[in-house]
Length: 217
Length: 217
Image (cartoon, rainbow over all chains, first blue to last red; front, side):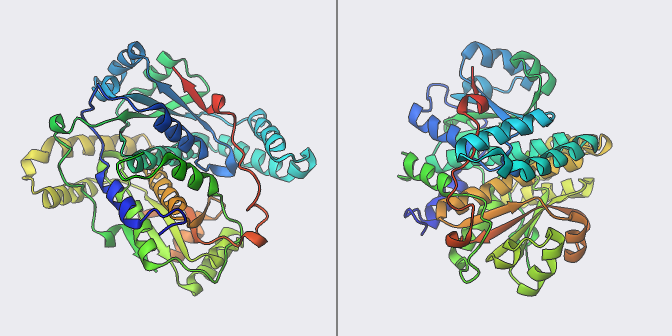
């Protein structure tokens, strides 16, 4: 039992219930209250240094969903889902980005700038190193995947379905959405399964045996 | 409310309660029942094509934790936590890896090989492309971060603390653990906070305003 009385069984039941939905029920929409919890899960996810090098474009406009569909090779989840989340990572991290984050720290924690100077310099050093070594996109996109994990787990726990999709043309999605400093890395359709018409709904999950994934020392 | 009666408020309370612990209570250990749920969260996380291109080394041996500490610049969370999870991604994806996964599909879903031939070829093509374009490590490590997200959210929901750490020398950690085909990408200490002795325990979370992170269309 956790602090709030949520049992291990409930969590495991929900994580087993989750699957990557191939066919959504286009008539069912996620409520505003549930949607707020899903958005907050993205916002509350941790990131390296706390830098949040990503943004999430939430598409509910049906015309825009239809426009994005060809860029995802016609996958019907985009149109049929309730909310489409375009997970996008920041392609660079500049000194200005770090300074913007440091200012937010000063504001939220009521800290003077000088208390944050070492932290600022460390972050600027890490960002410059990642840019010069051409690993900045890898670094930032990993953080975005952690946040995607939070979105997917919260959805599962709330009994809301999702389908994360990497099969799309990022350049096309970026163009349609007008993304410049960010690049789309996953599309995550959120809504409710149409289990009767989804071939995947009742197939067992395929996972390697535990001994292959978990190595206890 | 989700299927199982878990409220939005409970989830939000737990995600707000979570923070990256700097000081663990070395005397408190995660129970076997809770640990099983955390491990299952890693196992049940989704991955691209379902390929699970990662593994998780769970270190509870105190000598090994101490040996790893210098590779993480002396961060005390490694020794003080209950379970240290070394999140490691697969550095390559070979035809043999894909075939191993296809065999697991045949076994778990009782499917004949011919039903999986197209899926197998698609995966092999994607893997070869990623290897030739030198994006395989980025791709696989992103999947590992999604699983890390599941670990962190389940921990938060169970009222268990964690601290994900990127500040370590991967080559050293790989050497100590004997990892060859995999590379450590995050160390995640799991246990219980020593709130009285942790400067970060009571500081508010720093997040950008919602409008900067969420872009509704």
